[in-house]
Amino acid sequence: MNLRTFLSQWQWKPDTRRTQRVRVDGGWLRGLSIFVTCALVAFACVMATSGAAPAHAASLASNQSNFGSNVYIFNPSMPQSQIQATVDAIADQQVSNEFGTQRYALLFEPGTYGSSTNPLNFKVGYYTTVAGLGLSPSDVVINGSIDVYNQCLGTNNCIALVNFWRSLSNLTINVNTPNAGCYNGEFWAVSQAAPMRRVHINGPVTLMDYCSGPSYASGGFIADSAFDGGTVINGSQQQFMVRNSKLDGWTNGVWNQVFSGVVGAPAQCFPAQSSCGGPYTTVAASPVTREAPYLYEDSTGNYNVFVPSVQHNSVGTTWADGATPGSSLPLKKFFIAQPTDSAATINDALGSGRDLILTPGIYHLDQSLKVTRPDTVVLGLGFPTLIPENGIVSMTVASAKGISISGIIFDAGVTNSPALLQVGDGHARSDHDASDPTALQDVFFRIGGAEPGKATNSLVVNSDNVILDDIWAWRADHGNGVGWTSNTADTGVIVNGDNVTAYGLFVEHYQKYEVIWNGNGGTDVFFQNEMPYDPPAQSAWMEAPGVDGWAAFKVADTVTSFAGYGMGSYSFFNQGVDIYAAHAFEVPATLPASSLHDLLTIFLSTAGSGGIQHVVNDTGGSSTSANPDVPVTVVSYP
Image 1: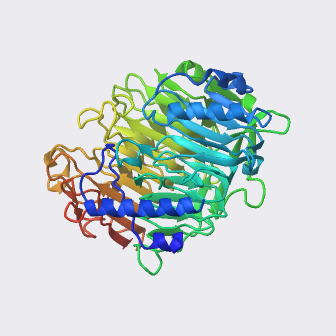
Image 2 (image 1 turned 60 degrees about the vertical axis):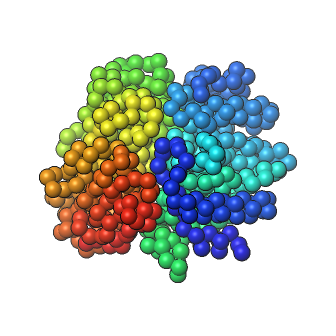
Image 3 (image 1 turned 30 degrees about the vertical axis):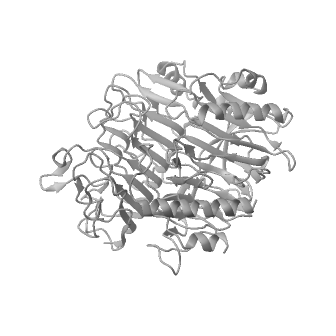
């Protein structure tokens, strides 16, 4: 039996709770998972927190004076043994450093690293960016692998459910993993906030780590990437978003696998069925996209930032037929900020017309960063993290066209903020041009977890024609400062602008509506949500008298047009009392027919209580503790 056939016979049902505990219920499911894991291990084998970075690493990094001590720039002339030692030392520190303060960017200058006989293989931990510095993904070639594995938290508790905040971009990997045993191939077992962009992988790829059990995974986002010479193993990934890429096969679905503008994507198949596998939501072309800006080194050794152009109704990668369309900005146009720079200093640079690079670290802000000039680029390296003081908004973006905000974590501060990022001034949206849209790529929000924090809303979008491309807004369910009255947060994302397009929208655990969509002409391709685990009583979580809970996704009654594809809301209530949400999705029944495609709800465990009573408005059955781990679907609404 080949791997494709084997996987098609099973529906993976990972436990998605992120409390880092071994699941104690559902013995039949655990048994199935262990059996499948063992079978996959056999197949693969046959086929085949704090502390400083290492002292010697500084000698390896060229041009570091521009970017600070936590940006490591490698070139092919460096001894591979020293490169290996450096990346391994950083991984050793970061793989388990979920809420640490260290941040790193590992950048590779154009050239080839590793060989068929001496490959470069290394792991990527928390808050680590790995990127090539070429203009094209083919300019940087890694012969080896760049991996994310399960974290083993105890006996039979090896999972990828919390593998957040890391990224891989702009390079080619010729997969070569000799003597790796089960770990034969490129392993990218990640969850939310772990994007892969502009990557070309030649060889086998898996999005789950099947080499240790139970191997639960909850991801993820891929864009502008190509996979050749091997079927991508989805495995236990309960949901995944792939946009504008090229596939050479995809093994299976779990609950919500979505493909938009993907060459070689599985055919539409929702809900899962024996005739076509699935569940797959397949959108033929992406309506409007703008890839993330990226740093690169030109032929003269100078650094620039490339800003890709907007694409309409696009399919496949931007680089399949030549250079990615767009424009280059020389590094001298950028203010390169360090965590020691004050908000006033950064604002002075932005106000003088400079673009902005935020280098790795934690930025404590005593005033809002203000992005006002059209076409400004704000680029984060190594997951820079912004924390507001005294209840301010961390960043405000003017109602201006063509702004890019990319690669940043917005943490809540101890004092409640009305929002963490605001895009657009109120409802003044006239400056926004559909031909040059503002875009947010790989922008993540966190309420609690790393430290106590509160914010009423995380992201507020007032501008028209904005593109949201890989957003994770998370009210933490574990970590520091976590509790119903501790890390308080009403709503993750509010969209007031018209013609806003979202891809890969992940919003979890907020205490009221998780998403409120007030703008007309909006589109959301992929939505993943977990309702809050911790309402202490039904009376503490009521949308209105007689309406239990809060919908995960609310489209305002005034909206006349909205399109949604592949949208899932999951529930698990862990306070030992029955908690219900009347609806997962609330939308105007007057929307055009079939505005929403492929909706689902699911109750995540037999250990919890309560659940979701209807999928969308009063349509769709219930997903509760009475039918755990079983998707309840609505194919089309209204």
